[in-house]
Image (cartoon, rainbow, N blue to C red):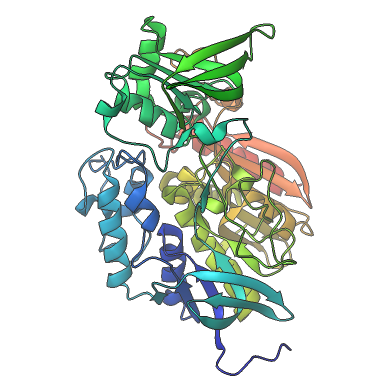
Length: 517
């Protein structure tokens, strides 16, 4: 074992960062009675939201009014609340706005930490993380700490700066003026076509003489991709202006160089879809809105995690652990590489459920606490009831569609099945790969591409449920690591999957035929 220097403080878990992810994980570990400490360099929680987004309007929905009174179902449309029981601090008590202010999020996170008396040490910057024989040494706030496990929940640590000659002449999103009057009459180039770029463009649209948004790849609209991190519909004024010939434009191009010439900039472009056409455009202002990346500078050699393609995020295993540093885990927006641009692991409404599961996995490994499950009868009626009850109620399966799933492991010797909840499907398949008969069930979208997502031909017959375009339940049968069968249940406008002819009977028939083999 590693010999600890005198005065070294030890904890089983050290969490780096007291943003939403750090608070959520702290809450769950505290509820379990685990030994943890959360380190935060700022004076309070949620430091990121004190600065970002720059124009202070979040893109996370705050749907206060719902047809349901069930707190679990209401979480499907509450993208900001952290999970806790009882639900004494709903985010809706802090804002009634559909797109709330970031300042409301700061207030909410501060109250959450105080209300639950979480073990957070503020004004404590982490300076170095080093892997040792049986854990980690962490230098923080002038002290040496030792931990069996380190969970990085620090969020984005630095701007993502593209490799473009002359990029130093672009003003970063983190530093740019948010006063629209400062752009009056100016030609403005915005590098990037994500939400920060469109947020910026929307703010200056009525002031700038010309706004161009540029990146090599085509625009990704959230209503096409189903991903909340892609460009949202409330930025439609920018797209209207593009199509209505106002000289505001969205460009698919490579920026070859930004060259200052007097009081303006010559920007050399190569268009992506124009047979190699090049152009030199003139702008008075160039803004960089190209997102953020993880800061790895605190990790010692031999402890620096491998990054996912693109270099912005750490590469993780199915349990959110680093692929190459044992015992180093990631939480929150940093832990999204396995469902990047798919489910909602980048956002509070998604990672709050991931962290509930991560807590169970950590306690299983470091505290010997078995992964919880419920025993159910392995007959068609019982399994059908379990599946329909969960897909009609769970906010985790709803939000983390195509990522988190429930698992039913059939145990013929015991005459029943084990029901596990909210596991990443790749983790479930790896975990239960030695079982001959198990099912996963989750919610999924249709896989077809549609020319117009608002004019989709539907086929409301149970035997054509696999053609459903909207979110709907999918049950998968595995044998070992092999997917052997899949059943889709028909989509439903109100997400209520209980119709006898469309949902109940097809699922009963599926289990009856499969369990009889």
